[in-house]
Amino acid sequence: METKNITLLSERAIWERKSTRSFDCTRGISRECLEGLLRTAMRAPSPKNRQPWHFTVVTEVAAKECLSDILLRKLEILCGERQERGKGTDDLELAQGSVRVLRDASVLVFVSYVRDPGNEHGDSHRWALSAQPFEVADLQAIGAAIENLLLAAASHGIDSLWMCDVLYACQEYQDCMGLRQPLVACVALGYQTHHQTPREPLEAKVDEWNG
Image (cartoon, rainbow, N blue to C red; front, side, top):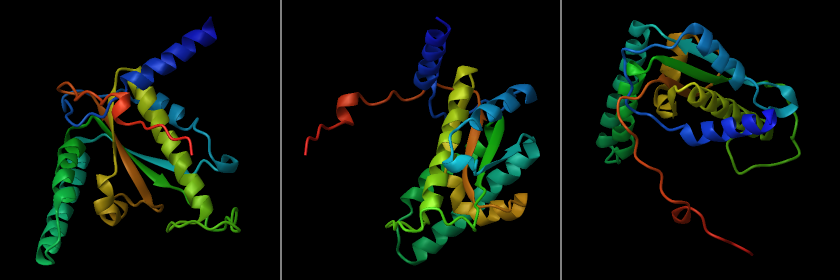
């Protein structure tokens, strides 16, 4: 019965998790709860148990405003540069929404990749990607850790957003926060201020292929 209950709770967290883009800036998350979420994130599997993740937690209002301003300025610079070259800026305009999220979320968790440059695992394989084989494996592990964090948050009634718009200002954030490892993503945690757009039905996203 206990195993069944755990399974049901896990499935419930998966269904209740949603991407929230409008947070109530007046609500906080306790340190005890946050530490529990991060411990759950770190239960993710990883290649050879390397645990290639590092979390930088930001809770102070002034710090969040500073990080929000950094992204805003970077997006403005990139937008100007692209316009001069006659390039599109649709993605930059969409990323503007993350500026508000960085400011209003209760907690920001910046996720970095602790890379082992001496790792030669998988050197005999070749990928059509700008990454070493072990880096591809490590990044999957980091993604699993982030998903654990999101599901743990959902089980506590906490909303979240997995953000990669921060990568537009990757170098600026690494310099500002003194991050020694590559930034991979940021997870915003807090409580939503409005209801979310429903998901598309399964039939709209799945095809059957039998070779």
